[in-house]
Amino acid sequence: MKAPDKNFSSTIGQGLALLRCFTATDLLLGNKELSERLDLPPSTVARLTFTLCELGLLTKVERHRKYKLGYGTLGLSYPVLANMRERYVARKLMKELTDSTMGQTSMAVLSGLDAMYVESFRPHEEWLSRPEIGTTRPAMHTAIGHALLFSLEPKRFEYLMLRAKESAPKGFTQIRRRIEGSFNQILKKGYCTVVGTYRRELHAIGVPLTPRDHPAPIAFNLSLSVYAGAPPDLDAVAAQLLALRDRTIEGMGG
Image (cartoon, rainbow, N blue to C red; front, side, top):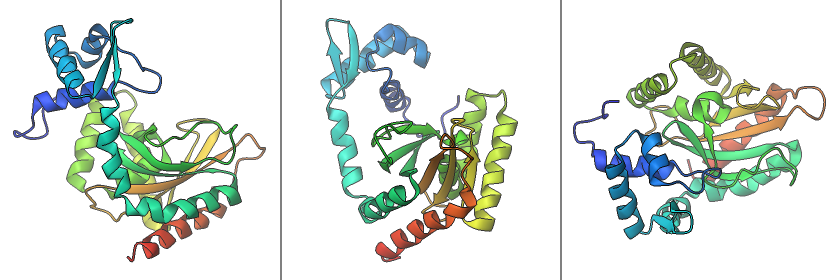
Protein backbone atom coordinates (compact mmCIF):
# COMPACT_ATOMS: atom_id res chain seq x y z
CA MET A 1 0.00 0.00 0.00
CA LYS A 2 1.18 3.51 -0.79
CA ALA A 3 2.29 5.74 2.03
CA PRO A 4 -0.26 8.47 2.90
CA ASP A 5 2.28 11.25 2.19
CA LYS A 6 5.69 11.68 0.57
CA ASN A 7 7.06 12.73 3.98
CA PHE A 8 5.98 9.42 5.53
CA SER A 9 8.92 7.58 7.16
CA SER A 10 8.65 3.93 6.13
CA THR A 11 11.17 2.82 8.77
CA ILE A 12 9.19 4.36 11.63
CA GLY A 13 6.00 2.97 10.12
CA GLN A 14 7.51 -0.51 9.95
CA GLY A 15 8.68 -0.32 13.54
CA LEU A 16 5.27 0.71 14.81
CA ALA A 17 3.56 -1.93 12.67
CA LEU A 18 5.88 -4.51 14.22
CA LEU A 19 4.94 -3.41 17.74
CA ARG A 20 1.25 -3.68 16.85
CA CYS A 21 1.73 -7.36 15.96
CA PHE A 22 1.90 -8.12 19.67
CA THR A 23 -1.51 -8.58 21.29
CA ALA A 24 -3.03 -10.09 24.41
CA THR A 25 -3.12 -13.44 22.58
CA ASP A 26 0.16 -13.07 20.69
CA LEU A 27 2.51 -12.31 23.55
CA LEU A 28 5.64 -13.89 22.05
CA LEU A 29 6.67 -13.55 18.41
CA GLY A 30 9.90 -14.43 16.60
CA ASN A 31 11.58 -12.76 13.65
CA LYS A 32 10.21 -15.35 11.24
CA GLU A 33 6.61 -14.83 12.38
CA LEU A 34 7.02 -11.06 12.27
CA SER A 35 8.55 -11.24 8.81
CA GLU A 36 5.57 -13.21 7.52
CA ARG A 37 2.98 -10.98 9.17
CA LEU A 38 4.57 -7.76 7.98
CA ASP A 39 5.64 -9.10 4.59
CA LEU A 40 9.13 -7.75 5.21
CA PRO A 41 12.55 -9.35 4.53
CA PRO A 42 13.99 -11.22 7.55
CA SER A 43 17.03 -8.92 7.54
CA THR A 44 14.78 -5.85 7.88
CA VAL A 45 12.83 -7.43 10.73
CA ALA A 46 16.07 -8.41 12.49
CA ARG A 47 17.25 -4.78 12.39
CA LEU A 48 13.91 -3.55 13.67
CA THR A 49 13.73 -5.99 16.58
CA PHE A 50 17.34 -5.24 17.58
CA THR A 51 16.68 -1.49 17.55
CA LEU A 52 13.40 -1.79 19.46
CA CYS A 53 15.12 -3.95 22.09
CA GLU A 54 17.84 -1.31 22.47
CA LEU A 55 15.10 1.30 23.02
CA GLY A 56 13.34 -0.83 25.64
CA LEU A 57 10.22 -1.25 23.52
CA LEU A 58 10.85 -4.97 23.00
CA THR A 59 12.39 -7.59 25.27
CA LYS A 60 14.06 -10.72 23.93
CA VAL A 61 13.04 -13.96 25.60
CA GLU A 62 16.15 -16.04 25.07
CA ARG A 63 14.57 -19.32 26.12
CA HIS A 64 12.05 -19.13 23.27
CA ARG A 65 14.20 -17.08 20.89
CA LYS A 66 11.29 -14.71 20.56
CA TYR A 67 10.30 -11.21 21.63
CA LYS A 68 7.65 -9.61 23.81
CA LEU A 69 6.67 -6.01 24.34
CA GLY A 70 9.00 -4.19 26.73
CA TYR A 71 7.95 -2.06 29.67
CA GLY A 72 9.13 0.95 27.70
CA THR A 73 5.86 0.87 25.79
CA LEU A 74 4.04 1.78 29.04
CA GLY A 75 6.00 5.01 29.20
CA LEU A 76 4.68 5.99 25.78
CA SER A 77 1.03 5.59 26.75
CA TYR A 78 1.05 7.06 30.26
CA PRO A 79 1.47 10.74 29.30
CA VAL A 80 -1.48 10.40 26.92
CA LEU A 81 -3.76 8.84 29.53
CA ALA A 82 -2.63 11.23 32.25
CA ASN A 83 -3.55 14.24 30.13
CA MET A 84 -6.96 12.99 28.96
CA ARG A 85 -9.15 15.24 31.08
CA GLU A 86 -12.23 13.74 29.45
CA ARG A 87 -11.35 10.39 30.97
CA TYR A 88 -11.18 11.71 34.52
CA VAL A 89 -14.38 13.73 34.16
CA ALA A 90 -16.31 10.75 32.77
CA ARG A 91 -15.11 7.90 35.02
CA LYS A 92 -17.62 8.32 37.85
CA LEU A 93 -20.45 8.87 35.37
CA MET A 94 -19.48 5.73 33.40
CA LYS A 95 -19.47 3.62 36.55
CA GLU A 96 -22.93 4.93 37.46
CA LEU A 97 -24.23 4.04 33.98
CA THR A 98 -22.81 0.53 34.21
CA ASP A 99 -24.43 0.02 37.63
CA SER A 100 -27.84 1.26 36.44
CA THR A 101 -27.94 -0.67 33.14
CA MET A 102 -25.81 -3.74 33.97
CA GLY A 103 -23.97 -3.14 30.69
CA GLN A 104 -20.36 -2.40 29.80
CA THR A 105 -19.60 1.31 29.47
CA SER A 106 -16.43 2.33 27.64
CA MET A 107 -14.55 5.33 26.31
CA ALA A 108 -12.31 4.83 23.28
CA VAL A 109 -10.04 6.61 20.84
CA LEU A 110 -9.18 5.66 17.27
CA SER A 111 -5.94 3.78 16.61
CA GLY A 112 -5.66 2.94 12.93
CA LEU A 113 -8.62 0.71 12.12
CA ASP A 114 -9.26 -0.09 15.79
CA ALA A 115 -11.19 1.49 18.61
CA MET A 116 -8.88 1.47 21.64
CA TYR A 117 -10.35 1.63 25.14
CA VAL A 118 -8.94 4.30 27.43
CA GLU A 119 -11.48 3.59 30.17
CA SER A 120 -14.07 0.87 30.68
CA PHE A 121 -16.37 -0.60 33.33
CA ARG A 122 -18.07 -3.99 33.29
CA PRO A 123 -21.04 -4.89 35.48
CA HIS A 124 -19.51 -8.00 37.10
CA GLU A 125 -16.48 -10.28 36.97
CA GLU A 126 -18.25 -12.86 34.81
CA TRP A 127 -18.91 -10.32 32.06
CA LEU A 128 -18.30 -11.48 28.48
CA SER A 129 -14.92 -9.79 28.17
CA ARG A 130 -12.26 -8.02 30.23
CA PRO A 131 -12.19 -4.51 28.78
CA GLU A 132 -8.83 -3.38 30.13
CA ILE A 133 -7.26 -0.08 29.11
CA GLY A 134 -5.55 -0.62 25.76
CA THR A 135 -8.03 -3.29 24.64
CA THR A 136 -9.00 -2.86 21.00
CA ARG A 137 -12.12 -3.57 18.99
CA PRO A 138 -12.50 -3.37 15.18
CA ALA A 139 -13.78 0.08 14.31
CA MET A 140 -15.56 -1.19 11.20
CA HIS A 141 -17.82 -3.58 13.11
CA THR A 142 -18.61 -1.91 16.43
CA ALA A 143 -20.85 0.89 17.64
CA ILE A 144 -18.02 2.72 19.36
CA GLY A 145 -15.93 2.34 16.20
CA HIS A 146 -18.67 3.85 14.04
CA ALA A 147 -19.02 6.74 16.50
CA LEU A 148 -15.29 7.38 16.27
CA LEU A 149 -15.29 7.24 12.47
CA PHE A 150 -18.18 9.72 12.42
CA SER A 151 -15.98 12.34 14.10
CA LEU A 152 -13.15 12.08 11.58
CA GLU A 153 -12.20 14.69 9.06
CA PRO A 154 -13.49 13.52 5.63
CA LYS A 155 -10.02 13.09 4.14
CA ARG A 156 -8.87 10.92 7.04
CA PHE A 157 -12.10 8.89 6.93
CA GLU A 158 -11.68 8.13 3.23
CA TYR A 159 -8.06 7.14 3.78
CA LEU A 160 -9.12 4.63 6.46
CA MET A 161 -11.86 3.29 4.20
CA LEU A 162 -9.23 2.69 1.52
CA ARG A 163 -7.06 0.83 4.02
CA ALA A 164 -10.00 -1.26 5.15
CA LYS A 165 -10.97 -2.13 1.59
CA GLU A 166 -7.42 -3.15 0.70
CA SER A 167 -7.05 -5.34 3.80
CA ALA A 168 -10.45 -7.04 3.43
CA PRO A 169 -12.06 -6.36 0.02
CA LYS A 170 -14.64 -9.13 0.39
CA GLY A 171 -17.78 -7.72 1.95
CA PHE A 172 -16.42 -4.18 2.16
CA THR A 173 -19.42 -2.68 0.34
CA GLN A 174 -21.76 -4.04 2.99
CA ILE A 175 -19.45 -2.89 5.80
CA ARG A 176 -19.35 0.66 4.42
CA ARG A 177 -23.13 0.64 4.02
CA ARG A 178 -23.49 -0.24 7.70
CA ILE A 179 -21.10 2.53 8.69
CA GLU A 180 -23.01 5.09 6.63
CA GLY A 181 -26.23 3.83 8.20
CA SER A 182 -24.69 4.49 11.62
CA PHE A 183 -23.72 7.99 10.50
CA ASN A 184 -27.33 8.68 9.52
CA GLN A 185 -28.47 7.44 12.93
CA ILE A 186 -26.03 9.77 14.70
CA LEU A 187 -27.14 12.75 12.61
CA LYS A 188 -30.80 12.06 13.46
CA LYS A 189 -30.57 10.78 17.04
CA GLY A 190 -27.09 11.56 18.31
CA TYR A 191 -26.20 7.87 18.62
CA CYS A 192 -25.87 4.70 16.58
CA THR A 193 -26.70 1.08 17.35
CA VAL A 194 -24.87 -2.07 16.25
CA VAL A 195 -26.59 -5.37 16.93
CA GLY A 196 -24.57 -8.57 17.05
CA THR A 197 -22.11 -7.61 14.30
CA TYR A 198 -18.94 -7.93 16.36
CA ARG A 199 -20.28 -10.45 18.89
CA ARG A 200 -23.67 -12.05 18.45
CA GLU A 201 -24.45 -11.88 22.16
CA LEU A 202 -23.81 -8.13 22.42
CA HIS A 203 -25.99 -5.22 21.34
CA ALA A 204 -24.33 -1.81 21.57
CA ILE A 205 -24.90 1.95 21.41
CA GLY A 206 -22.17 4.34 20.27
CA VAL A 207 -22.04 8.10 20.91
CA PRO A 208 -19.35 10.53 19.67
CA LEU A 209 -17.90 12.78 22.35
CA THR A 210 -16.04 14.93 19.83
CA PRO A 211 -17.69 16.87 16.98
CA ARG A 212 -17.33 16.04 13.29
CA ASP A 213 -14.07 16.91 11.53
CA HIS A 214 -12.15 16.26 14.75
CA PRO A 215 -8.50 15.18 14.26
CA ALA A 216 -8.49 12.94 17.37
CA PRO A 217 -11.97 11.51 17.96
CA ILE A 218 -13.22 10.16 21.29
CA ALA A 219 -16.43 8.19 21.76
CA PHE A 220 -18.52 6.31 24.35
CA ASN A 221 -20.39 3.07 24.09
CA LEU A 222 -22.76 0.97 26.15
CA SER A 223 -22.86 -2.76 25.42
CA LEU A 224 -25.74 -4.91 26.70
CA SER A 225 -25.90 -8.69 26.79
CA VAL A 226 -28.76 -10.62 25.16
CA TYR A 227 -28.18 -13.61 27.43
CA ALA A 228 -30.54 -12.27 30.07
CA GLY A 229 -33.57 -12.99 27.90
CA ALA A 230 -35.20 -10.74 25.32
CA PRO A 231 -32.90 -8.41 23.32
CA PRO A 232 -32.42 -5.10 25.15
CA ASP A 233 -34.30 -2.01 24.02
CA LEU A 234 -31.32 0.09 22.96
CA ASP A 235 -33.35 3.18 22.14
CA ALA A 236 -34.80 3.16 25.65
CA VAL A 237 -31.36 3.38 27.30
CA ALA A 238 -29.66 5.53 24.67
CA ALA A 239 -30.80 8.69 26.44
CA GLN A 240 -28.64 7.71 29.42
CA LEU A 241 -25.55 7.45 27.23
CA LEU A 242 -26.34 10.80 25.62
CA ALA A 243 -26.68 12.28 29.11
CA LEU A 244 -23.25 10.84 29.96
CA ARG A 245 -21.82 12.62 26.92
CA ASP A 246 -23.51 15.90 27.81
CA ARG A 247 -22.39 15.78 31.45
CA THR A 248 -18.83 15.02 30.35
CA ILE A 249 -18.81 18.00 27.98
CA GLU A 250 -20.27 20.16 30.76
CA GLY A 251 -17.60 18.92 33.17
CA MET A 252 -14.95 19.84 30.63
CA GLY A 253 -16.31 23.37 30.58
CA GLY A 254 -17.56 23.00 27.01
